Length: 262
Image (tube, helix red, strand yellow):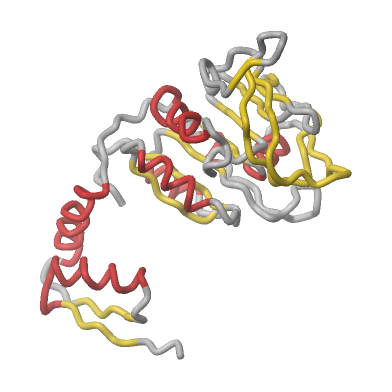
């Protein structure tokens, strides 16, 4: 975990194939972020002390029984929240709106009209239509859709197939987008995520990957002290990077045990 001095965003993963891209786009704007499962405890969220929270997409339907929901602490932290695709749908369902299964699954390019001059979209557009309305080229991947706004929310984006393609409660800093801003097919997606991180959450541009190596090594030394560490090493990227960092930090105090996955 980053030093407390860093601005940080918590990404809660609901199982989307694009979740890692959300983190990448935020890190490219020099913001520290971490991905954790959607069902982390409330205490973890409070201890993490994020400046903002992102709810990722996912393969489930909020209309079907006991499907994933955001922890209660997401709504009690007093920080901005951005729900993406399934993240928007669970935001709507949990805060008093309505979600219904769509008759047709929408997958691929879509054109979203920005509405209401929201802080998330203000000044961002790919072009304008004949009436002078700003339009965004985006990538959709969903079956369900929000059909009724939660109290306090307004529509900030719509498409031909999705009347509520984006929504916001700007007083609380809650935003939801049905499309995926993290993929390159959404042309203004990186700018939208940067807008959320910096302008809405107030994150400073105070982190980069190059400096993170030194921070991680210092953190390992402080945590381990004079103790020894045993690491299961499979040879994959995650365990190999962990082994390299720990060895750089504590040298011979580390013993690696090879785990053969076949």
